[in-house]
Image (cartoon, rainbow, N blue to C red; front, top):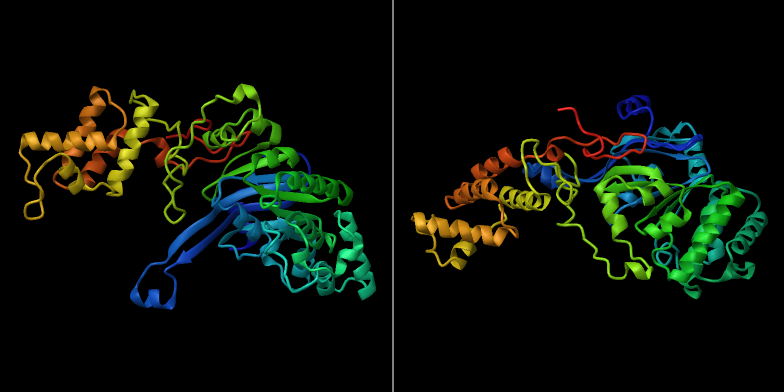
Length: 447
């Protein structure tokens, strides 16, 4: 499939674009890592397992802006940044830089792209070679691209060292002689050496003290003004995002769930995940001292087997119940958790029977009379549910739990699915709207 075909397949425009010309256009960017894909696995007939690190994201970075890419650790932020720069090979999708298809470039065109698009890595302690002076580290890109004479390159390095707040005489020093903040300044100088137009800033302050973070952020803002740079800032620190970004894209489990300008996102978030991220930010106001923080429920699902429909639904506090179902959200969440455990068969029936004082299996099966069966169901309910369900729902859940006494897992799961299946698990929400958000609450699907 050609790049133009990929652009058409994944949408001609990205949602939530700011005014201005897009320097970077990302369409349907996908990066999967595959397990069980060795020659030995193929000989054994094992099917490859895809780890869906980035799964079809689309956005633009407008010339001169700073776009923030945020989300929890492991959501795919760094992989997205590295893949759009071709530091990782994409599985699918396309990226255009100043109109040119990045994944189709080779030879001189690829070298030109490498010069115009650089990255500042997260860890200033491991991103520099301890055996090479910082002057040589910064000069390396100039040497590779053959820019100027050797003396001109050295002079360029000394100018950059001073520009990022270091001294020209630091040229001959080694990384071990510098603090974390100074090393990050070296990383920034290295990225600026070949005069790029676009920088991916991958958690540039996460390894630094708070006071040093502020210095680096102010430096990046000044450099952007002085050199006309465009930034993609990857971070999980929302205070950093608010300080420096023009727009923000929120990422969850390999997908984008919301895009908005920074003030709109912080003042009026629309996706439940964004709301939860903002709610978790520590606040310095004394009026907020006693506030209760309601953390997200459950664990982050595995990118090897992400949930169907909305990937956030397993942790969302606002899952949409079926239309004909009157149920409190807390009760519904408990039933959803129960469904997941039944579907995954994560309940130890032997332990439940033992705790209820019931006979162990006889011949591999439980042999309960009616009274014992009721006690088994009661123990299951007590262990698996933290709420008292109203009558109709208690009867339905008890009937499903009763099926587990006969180890009829599939039948129990089907009964709960038939009664409680949500549109959030049937349909994948689309990132759409003037304030783009991928949530069925904001963009109800047409059933």
